[in-house]
Image (cartoon, rainbow, N blue to C red; front, side, top):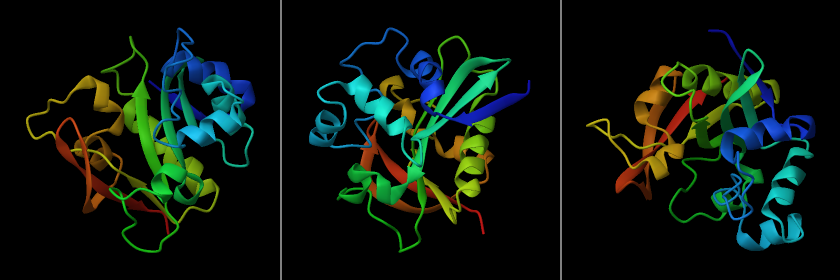
Length: 192
């Protein structure tokens, strides 16, 4: 299969929503909970999480990429400059490794019905290409390493070590954060 990825610009917002929130529930994450603080979400969306997500798509750096398989939106990868991600900037658990202005991947989702079809690697590759096209020197992710291959599906959005290794990332450290009771790693792929 040949997948395409595109930044989630306003004209692709519904495709993004089809992947992460097909029922359009307002209380759903909308891929905001790990990007913005609650006050930022309320202000940006004027009380609506969906509206806040839409507004992020209007920015110079839309909040990620959507993967398509034959025109159907099948995956989402949240990526952007760490400095534009208030939750990471202020995190006491996922601290910067150094002063490199990394772009951070904080969420990877494959749409139900399209999993186990090889979407993840091209999705991450598309996110990396998007970051590279905008001058990112390095892309960073914060996955877990489920050595037995199992993890709580509600936390699967953080990704796994193996998933990122397949896309050329290397472990450069650990965080104080956990997902599915496992420590989250810091993995990087240099673009320079």
